[in-house]
Image (cartoon, rainbow, N blue to C red; front, top):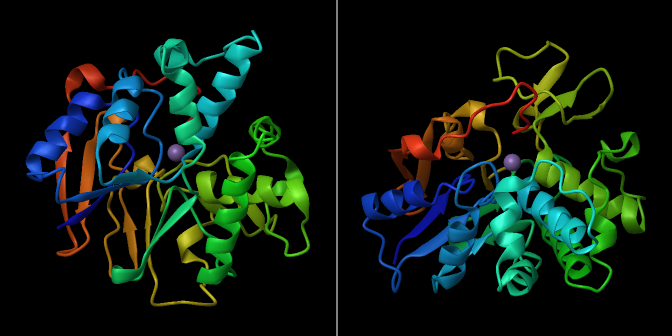
Length: 286
Ligand SMILES: [Mn+2]
């Protein structure tokens, strides 16, 4: 059995099939762990979700675009405006949509792979968190998402100023909002604000000097833990060290889809198929 971690698919179904072929994936043997953002932007989000749900040893963490999907589902059922979610429409209109959404709500924010002492998540983790804290926080968010009140968490789509930095004394919704923001959207830490900056998407090296990539903040605990994340397409999967692995190859933006073999620490990639590349809009949000 081999465990593969796969970066942001974003509805690129055919590219995913081609990646699975490239790694000689055996559904009865191999485990697939996805880093979230399976949906949105690309043309075939519904097909990607249905495929992943059908595979016996496949799991995913939640990405910011899964939260976007949950919001779109809620809006669709409340007959509100859909905004820019046309590529999510097939999921919302599918006869199976209720079950699919119920399943997405059951995904965790993080996965811990004990065998490899690796933590998988979509975007970032805070350097003050211990591994046990992170697992507890992820369970708190999962419990809420699984409850009848889940919509309350989804509606906080816009990041509030107060939810840009983790505080131990946060209670109830402030706590959950901040966890979701950092874990599914984090990229840079602002040295000026002493808080996360969720807007800058520049490649590290091109960013203002006041911004530090989250992974350059000094970890205070569990320094041997391997951190594996997606979300940051402009990194193009360029970080692969013993302790840090970035796996968003920018597939839907014309880049590559990446699979990381947890046993060999090697990455296999495929180029996105041209028909699955998303046309970047001026204010496109990754
Ligand atoms: Mn993302």
